[in-house]
Length: 206
Length: 200
Length: 210
Image (cartoon, rainbow over all chains, first blue to last red; front, side, top):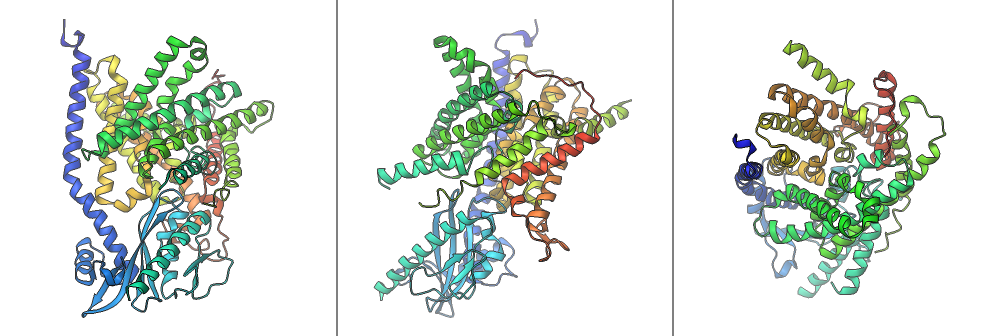
């Protein structure tokens, strides 16, 4: 009668396998947890810097991004109405306004950079989205985001519009991603809501 | 969010899961059984019903397990294994219950239940629920909608394939090939639903 | 002798018994990401990693595994490797991890991996099982890469996100439909059609009830 024929053998075996594999996974998980959290932080900081167009070329490594972020960007205060502030030589250069709203599938989170004149857009960047890869997911690509650079926020609603490729551009308009109408519409909607709300708060603060 | 808009949102998710985000035609989940069990409408309906039921319940169970077991201990990466165990256990449990209380239902649905454990649509729905950060109500309506959407697709496919029986199809295209092409055309038709839900 | 057998296993896994051509198995977990070549390549790597190592592990453990818990052990082993891959991706390539979304996790339900573990690794020595798993995964990844190359080239006019002559110029009117879901169905159908037309019909046609 070998060990294998005992009735409790399968249970013991299963328990042993589960225990060993779980132990390895938990060990591996705890080793990588710090890194995963750092990645999320860096993704946010990279989006802020990207939206403000601060030194894209030289900022490739996570540590360079973190250093640049900590020296140049200040947390929101009352005067900025929830926007992060880009400060250089003690003067305010631009605001980085966090955007958050529903995408087609999952929430989209991003940053839009606006100069101190509160009109000129410096850029846009996203750090969280789950849109369809190749369609809505293209909003993170430079082909889409580069369009925002230098656009002027309109005084009438909508401040910025995302229009189909067939429509002619002006200083308040950017082109949508082809094939991703849903993502573009939703993005335009919550982006404008956020910008308008921010502008109103800024006016009240004055 | 108040109850009214909460309900409306759940309803939007339900319809999106059936039409615009059909788990099979837009997300390619549950293809294996879709290709192999779509020869007859009757079997397709049986399998479809089983999927709707299992998906709705397991997504709720998975949601609870994720929220109250995995998240508190920050071991979310165990979700893959935990979800599949929950699905397998639930299917086993349901099979026993049905066998005991409704022999007729067991006769019709019973053979499909084992097929469901390996249906990736079930696990896929639960994984999407985690990524999209649904609450319990949204998760359940998403699970039900995905199941219903999957069932609709497989029943429609079976209806088409029954009529294809007498058609002359090139040899290399027989079986899975032609099924894939039909699925492509169906997916094309379903894209037409996009935009129906644009008014939030 | 061993060498010949290994060669045979490789050839069967890549072409003759290629799981995608023969049975259209396991495409669910990956077809959705085939609109970009890079995503597909990573997804293919994940499948190869999981198939090879889980076949190896199942084969090593086969003498000690009791029959009644065999399937559960296999699921556990596959899940184990999938979690390792997913976690590694999250830690070292977060952008890709976000792109692939739930599809890495869905490898667990990929019928090919389970199929290789059941059909081959259970009755063969570890070395051979590893090779079988490796090349089954590779055969599968190749087909998906073909789909991805066609879809990205025709749909976006790029390859691996890079510009390509002719297709990236205005001369080429991009077929948006190719990067949308129907494109995947059509492309795969045509690839399967071609492969099945070239391949001689090995098995007599079976009428399966279900």
